[in-house]
Image 1: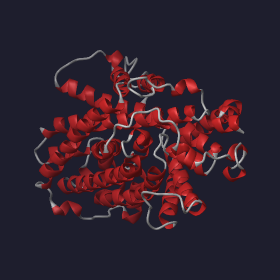
Image 2 (image 1 turned 120 degrees about the vertical axis):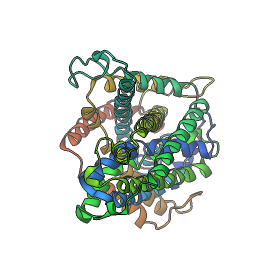
Image 3 (image 1 turned 90 degrees about the vertical axis):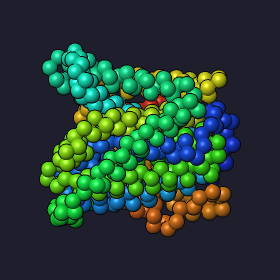
Length: 467
């Protein structure tokens, strides 16, 4: 029977002790640095290779450095909240699980439901971006590919499907079905290569910095730096998806909080150094918003590095696909295990101990989005759910600290309740910047989710069956 202390109806809560005592179905194989690599893989991607140049050129100028610092501090407030929860609840599901345990079933459901679409759409958007780089590199090699396979309908003459993007989504799904140990080894290797390329760009570019390019530092004013922060914020999360792998960590209580903090800290250092080099090599007015570093190196006579940067971008963005597909499959698995979605989806491979069914469903779903939707339409499916997840986690960590102060915590975020409150408020502020079409998509998906929960989840969840 669900006790009154744990809420009733749509506000019934899954006790933290019950979550941690669940029979484990996934394989605990990830160490601290593998978790950190997955986090870095989700954070560093388009932010360095594309977004930094666009914000520097159009919004902030050299103060793009300040934009990343502001976004990083705001993201750190949410990251510390995730870290405290990860040390308490070493289970799959991340924001969904934390929301379910503290704020109730309905809150957990809607965060989980929205992340199913958001994470899948992010995988698709990233795949489309990588596909463009593949096409560029093959063109440089003189390979003339048929138009039908180069993009979604409406993106160019003769385009039928973005075949590269489809294959990439299916490849990541296949990789994840091999088992978390094998998949994490691949991710760690690729993240290492990505960081090496970023360091190469930073080191080579450092010797071509002209300090005159930093003046004026705030050409668009302080407001330009804050507007830039709202834009680049979407390049400084990824630890949220990584935290869904808590149930596959060998020592989640100790390692997950460290991995969340390490991944954000390492990524922010690389972002700051890269933006410093970018705006120091070339005047912000001349930076190409679509290929910032390529144009910067070309401006100092090092255009030969453009191909290296393109390869780095492909490697860098590929790891983002891995992290977010891992995230969506673990959220789906957790919701199904809790009975909010059919238990059929929670089936794991008897040997590899990974949720095979949901992995292939997500792989095919993201492949269809990537293959047949233009990147702008696919991107409109993202962002709002992740920001709402940040709000929920930041509020939940405050609530639980006061409701259960005695609960064992391997990590306690400092500055309670100010730090998580800052994370929640900043996320709400960023939501106001989202386009109306994003709100429309969210409303439609929210209504569908409400119907599914009312018809199935509310009556079939594990807590409902017990009570």
